[in-house]
Image (spheres, rainbow, N blue to C red):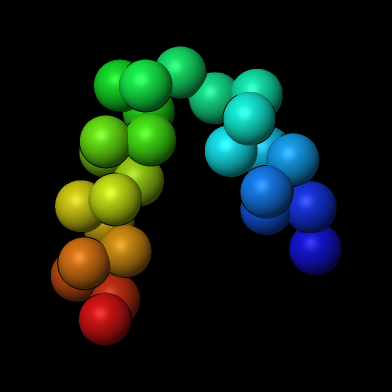
Length: 26
C-alpha cells in the first residue's frame, strides 16, 4: 500500500489527526 506516499502528501495537521486515530486502533 502507498501509505508512506500518502503520508508525504498530507498536511501536518492531518498527520496529527491520523496519529490519534492510529492510537485508537492500537
